[in-house]
Structures are given as structure tokens and as C-alpha cells.
Length: 491
Image (cartoon, rainbow, N blue to C red; front, top):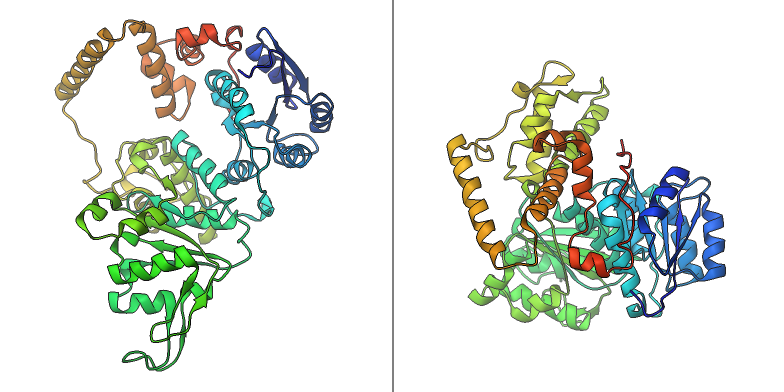
């Protein structure tokens, strides 16, 4: 908590019942809380009383939390805002983080995340810089959703996109093939001040080594066999915009040297020319290789690596964010149905369960291709498990006896580790952590989670809302909140 013992919070939401719950949940000594159902009233109160923190629903009557955040940041560049919603889109999350929101939370996560995030926000207030440059506004309604994800790892990716879009810093995007690295690069460009200029993507592996330099920097007429005309390179084409270099780990060393010069000095020359050209291009790069290993092997320049790796965004593979599988599958199916101009297609529950059980070694690209193939081959507007062809590589098969043995081994290891951590009460800790892991695994469906764990839903809710660390909870001024009331899950 900040040194000031009097902490003032403002909460705005059109739902009076939610406001009552949130105020009770955050109640603590030295903390005053004001609640409002209208954004205008909340803004006026914030300006008048200079509150420490404002918490707002994204969807408000007459305005939006995004608009409230925008106006508040114009009034007070140091304002601290947390947004929450049960129906926030990818664009909402990215736009909010770009405008300077401290965090964006799903309403279904508030019972066990809200206090922690509020504590963190209040602690960091004094460390914030006086001002931050604001990027040009990009109307949310004009941005087509291209990156889909509700999981916690993808929410962090969206927040990073929002933050880095405000600057011109180079970004290294890493992740397995098929994760959507180009989509992330495109989103950074769309939300940046360069959005009105060109976004050019180059796959380094798709261009022969002897032509890559010409592709990127251009060439003069007659500079090599086949150069019958002068050619403008990609740096010249997207001057003022963004250049995305995919699979940069495969770039030849000779081209790496010339790229380094551009990043250092903003200058380059066309192939076969002595003329020095200037460029103002933001460079984003992506790779599915471990570039640190490539540097050690001498395949990638160390100085170029550090120039490109100013900010790193890692996209987790689909198998590590399984709660997004159904969301993505439904998205692809809906889009394909719209293109076919036929009846809306749908999955059976068994088909969705089968998609959940697959490991997706080809990630999102494999999922999209699988849904497209299923739609092309099915005989009705309902997709059955038999309509969805899956490869054996990603199938998960395990002998039941082997599963039990592995679970016992894991528990044995847990007991051994916990023995060296006497401050942790093991059973309550396991109940809490297992409940939270299962809750996320089942896409935050409380009924399915409770059934899987073999406990009552009220017991599950108590596990989800329990403080993470007992000692910290006692010391925390926000830990005096009463028991968490179950909130409605967003549809």
C-alpha cells in the first residue's frame, strides 16, 4: 500500500447488486469506497476528490469504460484505472491497455483476482512516471477481431500488444508454427500511431537467399542478372509504417548486417547503388527458433539479436491454453458458415469434447484447417465427431494404470517439496490450487469443475476466493473483506 493511509476507491457499474458485492469485497480499514451506476458521476467524483483508483465495467449506460478511461487519462495522465467485464472483446483489452489501463479483468475472475490486482495497483501508484505519450486513437468499432482468446496467457499477450503499440520499439514475437505470430504483429501495427501507413509482412524462408536482400532493400537496374528495372524495396515501400520479418532466424548473415545498419542508423542502400536512403520503419520480427542458441552457434548476429529483442512477446501453443479451443472452433465455424451463405453450422457436445482432447501440434492453424475440412466434407449443418478428421500425432492416449501411477508420483514429489516449506498448510493449499487449475481447464464453468472435483459448488467458490498466501493476506489492508458472494458467470 502507498504511504498515505487514506485510500479512496471509486467503482462504477450499472448493476447495483454488483456494486454492493464489490464494495463489501474490497472493504478494509483506511479504505473509503464510492460506488456509481453512471460513468459521468464517477468521473466527476474522481476529478473532485482525486481518488487513488477507479474500477469500471467496460459496458456502461450511455458511455463505455474505454471512453471513461480515455477522458480520465486526458484529465489526469497519472490516473490509475482497472476495467472489468464479462463480455470484453480482444479489441477492448488491447485498446484499454494501449490507453494506459492498469489491467483488464474478466468478471468471472473477480472473486479471486480483484483484491490482488487492486493491491498491486495501489502499491505501484507512486512509482508511475508523471506522463506517458498517448498514441493516436484507433476507433475500436473499426477493428476486426482477428486474435481470439479468453485464456489467461492470451489475455497477457493482448495486454502486451496494447502496451508496445504506443512506442516504436522493435518487438520479437516468438512461438511455435501456427500460433498466429503475424496476427500479433498486425495487431501491434493497427493500434499504433503508424496504423494509417503500410504494414508489410515478409516470410524470410519463402524467398531465395540471393533475392532476399533485393526484396527488402530494393535494387538498381542492371545490378545483377535479371535486374531489368529498378525495384523499390520493402523498407522504401512501407516508410512511416511497419515491416514484419517472419522466421527471421533463417535470415542469411549478409542480410543481417545490412538490417542491423537500418536499425542503428535508419539508413540503407539498394543493391547495386551507392546512394544512401533514409527510412522511418518500425521493425517487428518473429521466429519459432531459439535465437539464443542460434547466436551461440554463429548462425545469428548477437548485436542484431539484441537490437530486435527489445520487447519479446511469446505466444503460448494451443495445448497450453485449452480453454481457447472451443472459442476458436466456434469462431472458425461461424465465419465459414457466413462465407457459405447457408444455415449456421454447429458442433455436437461430443465433437467439442473431441477437439478439447486433442493436443493440436499444428496449433491454431491446424485447428482452423481442421474445421474448414470438416465443413467441406460434412453432410449436414451439425458436425459430429466422425465429421472431424484429426491426426494421430496430437491424440492423447494413456493407459489408466499408468495415469494413476503418474498421479501418485506427482503427489509424492509434492509432499517432499512441501516438507521443506513449513509455512504452507499443504491440504488447504492443494485444494485451492487444484480448484483454480480445474476451473481454468473447464473454461471457468463452475458446474463442470465442481462435478469433476467431486465437491459442492459452494465449496468450489470458497476455494477460488481464498487468499493466495495466509501471511500476506493478514498483512494486507484489503484482506478484511467478507466471504465472497458467487457472481453470475458471463454468457
